[in-house]
Image 1: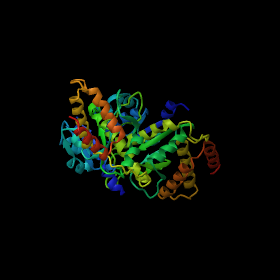
Image 2: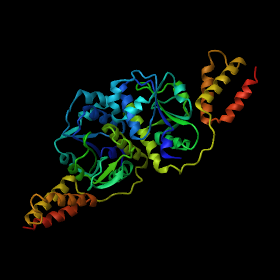
Image 3: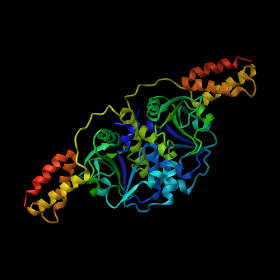
Image 4: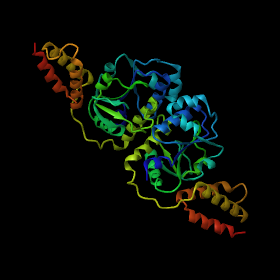
Length: 239
Length: 239
């Protein structure tokens, strides 16, 4: 595994960023740490000359940024997503520190598919729905007195921790699992939902809680492609 | 050693910052990581409503910031200073990564006196003179393609690394040395210079290189108070 190939597996995804200055500062923070793939989900103001100014020498990152309408589209082709948040949720994925989460990311460098670091809106963070699409939740340890970091500063710390992996590359355990891509997992979840509705197990209007838990289970297990095929085949046989 | 006492030993010193937005963002980055002591050496534009806006919930850090005309004043009462730079110098203090430098800072938590992280101007970094007053030079590992981090983002990473020490506090080797404060070391250097000039060893106009090396030696050895007293006493006897 080449170091540059590893870095090119990492996507920084910003969900609904509202300040163009932050988007530019994120681009600079990424390029400082050798990252290139920026995804913007419903950015409020992009492109913008304010983003360009803050990006400084990282204009190419902004110019190549992928802008989409949904996090699902931004996650297509990924096999592992780290959600970032300082808010506490009742039903969240496994919680890790930033450093430990990046340690998990390192293991993905040897597998197939991209890895995503997903950041929420400046004011509200990630929604429950967005967080549900992530495998782990990572937080940056910070002062209880004032724990809210500026978005681009939070991205800077995560990118810095990724760059620190450079020295340990090649010493990580090899991951040979063939994990399902995000879009395959989503498809499987939707099929389950349909069948569970059809069978009467899921009452209309009350499917939220069950599907949330099912989703959480699927992300936690890192379901593999072959397992998804088995489940899809099984679900197809149910009428 | 109490964790909050440890954090209160750390000064963030910005030399000649030119953008008020950066000063505000630095205040926020500090408060996020529990740091309080901000020193501004010849800030170009301070106070400023732009600083205030970027500080967000960290206005108190700005209001309590110490503004001085010289780095020497900002370093009074410190026993250890980490200079930060991405520029290479011919004659610099020991070079460390950010993480290793903060490891050194941790050892100071058990001694007497403050510790300083010294950051240079946005465009030019620290001057040779400023760097000469630091004990080690720390750099943030970054991409060769674009290694220049925004000032406040660099401060954020250093503050983050300090906050990471929380978990190891109490497990550091105890430092019982009674190190000379910055101002005592400076005094000793000036006395040396005077005596060396008086003896004819230092030719007028050619003292720069010798004094630079002497300064480097003094910082590297972490000269103690008693040793300074011995040297001062000795120098006093020379006519």
